[in-house]
Length: 174
Image (cartoon, rainbow, N blue to C red; front, top):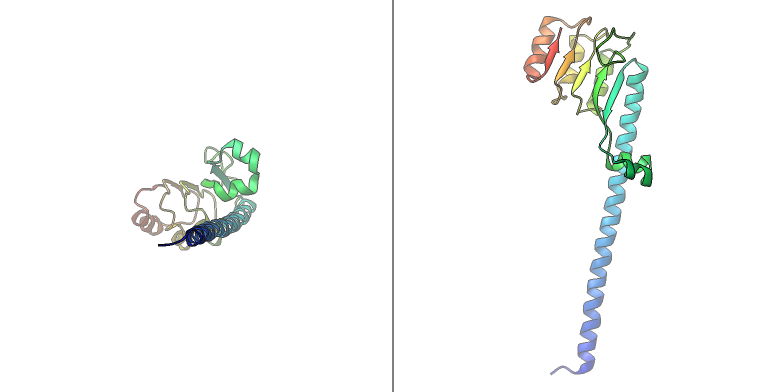
């Protein structure tokens, strides 16, 4: 039989094991959360830099934000970008999203490479831009694209046909 001293020693050892496990879990959560926050903030800052580049080229981006106001007020914009990143759902060359004449745009085939940062784009208005068939290959990753306006561009019928095969759900105006 074990004496009282041995039982007390076993209990202390059991508590130490549980304490070490608890600290390990806490550290794992803290380090993992910090890494996720850092990656998410970096990713969002990259996305903002790309958005600034597209905006300076004449594009108008519209966002759908899922961040609650109370979270933004409590934790600030950086935390909001990390946990509720804004999603660009529309890019246009006209201020009202295609309802009026396009503004002078410097969007071109090179600019379309940047759209990989916005995989949730649903509407893309490139009317009046310098986009050609060559630039259309950068749109194949936009699987959520529903509307695409290519009027007044240098895109040919061959390019439109390829895009219709690549993005079958998109309505393409030519």
